[in-house]
Image (cartoon, rainbow, N blue to C red; front, side, top):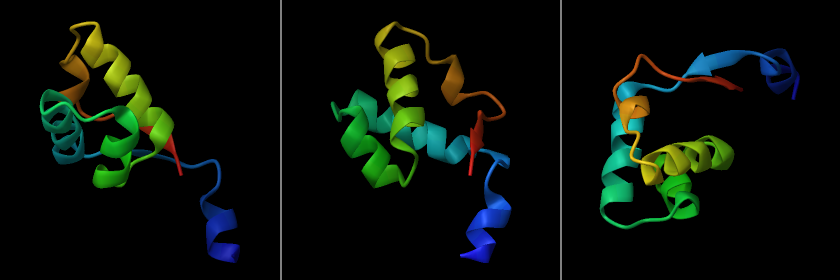
Length: 70
C-alpha cells in the first residue's frame, strides 16, 4: 500500500506501442472499454483516444506519449 501511495500524483508516458495497439483495436471495431481492458490502460485515457479517433485525428497514436496519472 505504501508503494501505491508513493506513486499517486505521478505522471507517466504511455508507450507508442500501446497507443498503436489501441489504434489497431479501434480499426478492428472494438469500443473504448474493451480496448482499455485488452491494452491494460486506463479507461478514461482510452476513451479520449477513441473520441479523437472518431473525429479523424490519429495523431495521438504517433506522438511521444500522453502524460497520465499513475
